[in-house]
Length: 213
Image 1 (cartoon, one colour):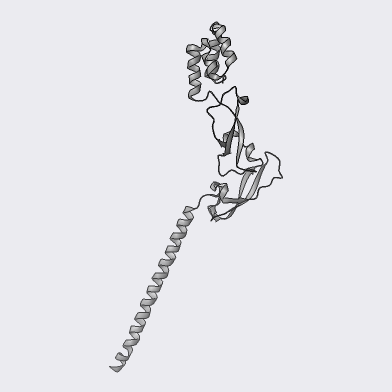
Image 2 (cartoon, rainbow, N blue to C red):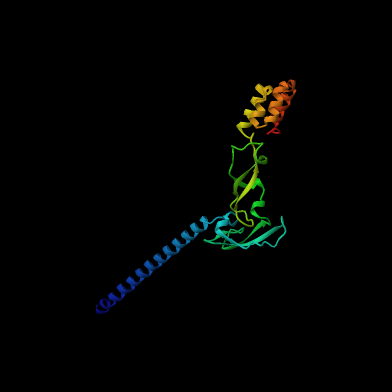
């Protein structure tokens, strides 16, 4: 009877310890599970390295190269990591680029301000535009924002159709040439009665084809 009484505190102590161990194990498991979930979400939030904007990178670009030469640059992300081609988080990666200054990038790859008030016959048919590289992942030498002389596309869009309508209906009076800024040719059409209709027909075709601007 006395032996059973003396063993009861020991049993209670073992039970309490077992409960504590189970609780600690559960807490440790939940903590590890949270870390896995957070790490997985952080992994999913990473973007591919080839999509990281240039302003978030520190890349080593050399000026000692031949224009048009394809090169590879070592880049480091300034904030966090990105996913390489093997879908692994990295801070350093390689990015290819062409040896050229930013102002030498083709016009199709630029985002430039437009000047719809320009005229074909003014300023050698060009205007000064503020341009930047349209693709924010493309590497180039020098400043990414610069000025560039762009050809004035006066007859683009609805203005082309205005010129075409003027040429068809009142082209014999030179209204289309006046509209396009060709003053001398406009007076020539007036005094020749549209070249007896031949000049008017030719101008209509040239405007429709986009050749006459």
